[in-house]
Image (cartoon, rainbow, N blue to C red; front, side, top):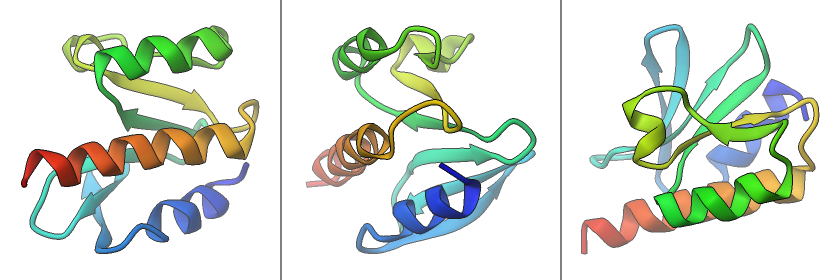
Length: 106
């Protein structure tokens, strides 16, 4: 999956916009928090899952889906190596993160 493909996929979710986030591009729902970021230099995405969802996705491919190596990773932030992970898996993770972001504001 290319960065453009990831960007297109993330922006398909209603109300999603891009914002700068350090050296990354952030994807957030307008007036809500971010649910994913993209890093062009290594073609990776960090998707903000729940810790339980993170465990499930990491079991799929431990080499290319893994917790972010910091406190955010302990909270569910998960790195996806887009060159190696099937787009359907990335879409599922984005849907989970997006849905969780919507649900937290209800």
